[in-house]
Length: 150
Image (cartoon, rainbow, N blue to C red; front, top):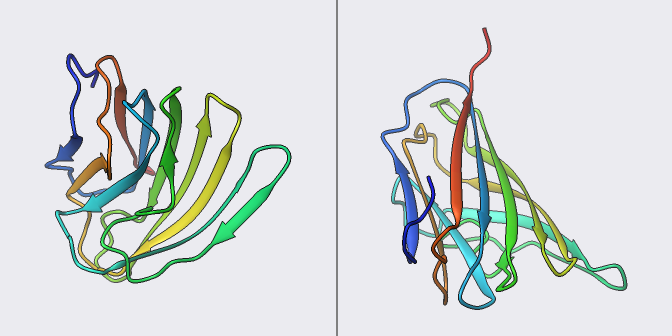
């Protein structure tokens, strides 16, 4: 999907069961902001993650828990442009919490790597991607891929 105009969030809904999911975002934003990803509309404190980032001269890591969104106050987007790839493992499984591995490259040279968890056994049927204090610019692209093993 390519945005024809700026938007506060993008939602993939009606995701069918089966396999892993991959989301690739190539986007510009109105300002540097934090990414917030919610699964199945869950706004409870059911998300946690561990992250690291580096810019060639310094590094940083943190591991917040009981967050109201994946990457909330962790993975930031760049006003200069961002490429984000998120892999949701066992997205349709109903016997385990959901894991996500994400990588985010900024146009300015920063790199984020994150492993996250959604504390729910529900199959992922929707993914909302927004920011805490910015909007996605027109022309930003969002792609959802479903990886099914045969």
